[in-house]
Image: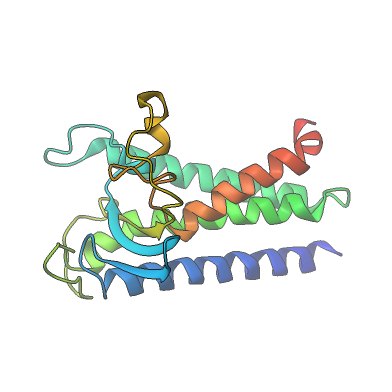
Length: 207
């Protein structure tokens, strides 16, 4: 496959992944109040709407008082990282010896990174604020550009163990459910791609 065709299907893949991520986020944000959930598969999979104000798992940089310079720095870092991943993907695409799986993995990571950048960069001035009582609407504004919150919704409480040992607490949420983190499709793209690349393409990447 020549470079033009590789580039075309990689761009198409990234666009499709981004559309899926953003459509689900926008639908959840404009139909759910904060904390509201919908059971998809009983006792296994829910859509539960939360917003992440900072880094992964809700971690923040800085106090959050006034203008959040930590969040701005994180946003700029994400953008620079995305540009770097895009450059690396183009460089690998030019090599005939690059496995297709490596290019797909990098496309997943890039789509995931850009998907969450869109939330932070745009949602604050595109939507009104989501609360536990009201649903967000288009045309509002709750934060400056780059200060928006990332929308998360995928929740897989596999089983409950209320008396789990404290040293295993990082694996359980506040309600005692195993695998408690709530994430979005963009997070899933990145996680799946990283694990896949490390397991199946570590030899290629180590070069």
